[in-house]
Length: 192
Image (cartoon, rainbow, N blue to C red):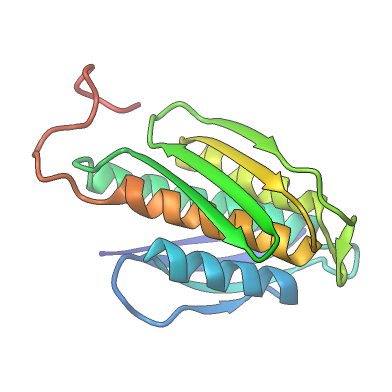
């Protein structure tokens, strides 16, 4: 099943498609480093994304980064509603050379992000590293996930962020894995 949303504001124009089908992702955010991280995200999550994004990147990358997180989160929430029989929890440690990141995800219906990362530098190329947290906060709130993301060991800033994206993607992949039991994975009988 394919999920698609558009978001058009005075700051961004987005058209994003998400699917669990194994198709090649096509990502064009206008922000090279974000393209790279989202390509890694799709590969390691098992999800496919098509992103056509335009934004006020002449100002900075904030609006396009946050708005992409919002829309991906909304698409994930739509997918979760259609496929409620899942593992629900996922966790993953990912090393990226000298760095180490851990992500823990609960498809809880209760949005919460604990983000603990001190990046070595404020920028990777032209990309502000503080936008990593903004992206994940937007995604987690709109997907209604609980997520704990921790950078346990630092080093090269590119490696730090890459380890975070990969660990989150892998944890999400585990959490989204279909359960053999045809029950909603909550003692309440509902996730919301």
